[in-house]
Image (cartoon, rainbow, N blue to C red):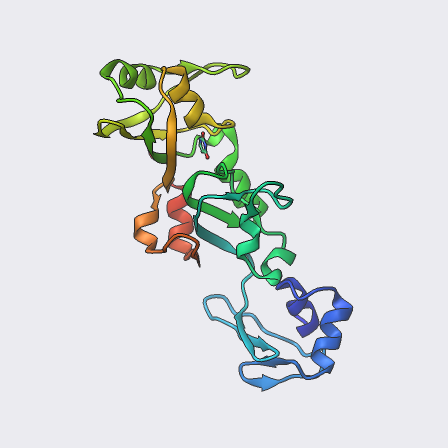
Length: 240
Ligand code: URA
């Protein structure tokens, strides 16, 4: 791949802009400045290609897969109106690649949010027919009754949605704390399910997507990491 094209694929702007960066001596490959935009780069599978732009180091990534520990007060849209945008937490080079949220969390929901520029991965995790499991824990306004747990397991109807929405692995953690798994992802699903059984979600946290658990990523609120190939597989793993 030509150096100018490689740089463009990594989010450094138009082909012309990348050519200019290279000609200006801003780009090093494996610690050596390259001023020829047509310099041929050989990207070998299973090896990492390091480069730097104006002294900042980067690793070549064909696609990016990111796990963010989402803080409260951040919206999953690019044009956030009343809050910050989760995209404010990422560098321009990532945004230029077309980074997107894999599904959405409400602005007040915390926890595991995946982001990618891989359209197929996004589809695989969000397509309604794939039924990817998502584990949520929540704090509710009122004590959760056995009857409410039973209803959540059996499935509840949600206005303007077809079919019933049921949770699995429903566990009462404390009087007003519940953890449960859902397998669809309609708008405000968890909050609407709890409202449908006569309770109210006061705090919501996503703990897991597929078999990928936030605890195993060891990231604090507001931090993010690139996912390894194994972690990408875990996110796609089907759990019942
Ligand atoms: N369900 C909700 O109600 N909100 C979220 O953020 C995620 C799932």
